Length: 306
Image 1 (cartoon, helix red, strand yellow):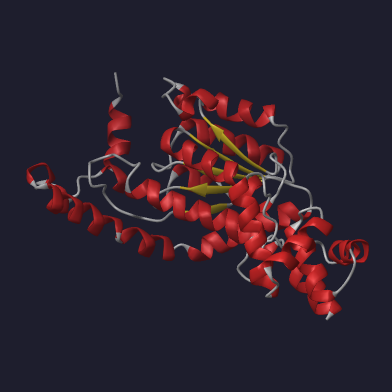
Image 2 (tube, one colour):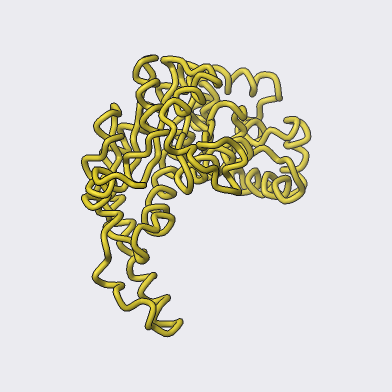
């Protein structure tokens, strides 16, 4: 049975409160229902905007970690864990980074992505054990994700990460959260009560997704995975992405389709390298050396060359 202390704790959380704007949501017609949900969703970007300074701190910490060979590790339970796994899994194909550079951990393991694993989120030791299993080091950044800000699995992981000396970030949707107090950096967008009481896959989940998008995307931009606004480190693993790679080379260089195809072939299908070769006139080997000299940042390699 739930304890009185747990009931009291939940009663204090904004994400668990009853939303006065949706008390009659079960009596609305479909259009009115959707209009109400949409109006609530519009509050989320504003809440995220209020915590941009904390997100900035987190991105700078992640960039510093990447530059010293560290990793970005997300961990959470339920919806929060799934969102972390989703963001991590999209980094390799988008930015051509190793699969272990951004890692998503979910309480209960991979099966929890599709089916709730009873009790996993309440296991403090499991959070620490999952970090031990991936050999967490002081170079890494651990982002604990929990809408309530009090999930034991996440608390256990952050406590272990602090002990190891890793940088810790909390992403919660309640101000002054338990994970926020534990972490080096607290990101706490306050989206208020949900459309359906306690259903934090809604506004809280949307806020978490927006923040995770920022953490990974901004960090990848900072380490040179984007040129202008183009995904120049795209890994063209299927026909659609091969077509996108060709289009990116054409957009970045104003090359014809044939010129872009030839450049990609000469560059072993490395988009960034093909662009540098086209814009600088360098052959593959010196172009590759130029990129390496500037840590893979295409803009800097071009500025020094042109």
